[in-house]
Length: 334
Image (tube, rainbow, N blue to C red):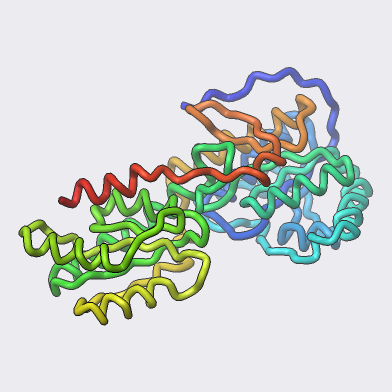
């Protein structure tokens, strides 16, 4: 059970706003529900901002009542919709957003999203003085200051279910399948799903690998009679097409690999129980921290304890990948 904060209320807020921004992640709806009802129970009005920062800069607000967030805890995606807003990179646009929030008498803004969205939240509060709290909503689990992000567990289980089915074909035809999961700059999904599915190898952006070593490893395992899962998990990486380039190179070495790109299937679906509980705890805690006078922080979870990390740290620091997971996958396959 997460240890929730016990903070003294020392500021009065009449209304807050909540928004989801950037890529959607399963669990955003439970977070919206939690923020809304935690605030309403404190006598605070709640406004949902539609389509993230794109909706904020045009004042697209909807007041949320308790009934508006009923029966959404099990739904994937976000009822508030989401967007990636290039215009928000302009300081003048952020100033405009601050004026719109003040016109609506918003005393605090809660932003649910990934590192780009949290960067926007930091700039907004720094430049306008609007109190802002961030929540880590991303399937990539690459946010500094929290061990877990809203949506990661669901994405992990979605990828795992798909890979278990792909493996049936891989084993039946004695073929290698390269399965690409999301992660342009982060291998957190790939490393954990790779261990969970018993992959032969995991390829992630954080760790260099050589194609020759991969081919040698595959040949050695066959020669030594080791069982084959038929699965190599590949994080998509910063350059599109990595998995197909690997497949072409493996084919040139005499392999006959199949390729499966899981893509956006990892973003959708019902959030797992874990993500629903995490989102609910972080959402309620964000209101507690806001009423305690905190701003410019992200609410996360470390060692089962709810924590607050400065948004500036989120911008400047990167959550490291545990390389032992990649090593463990190879160890357990021998």
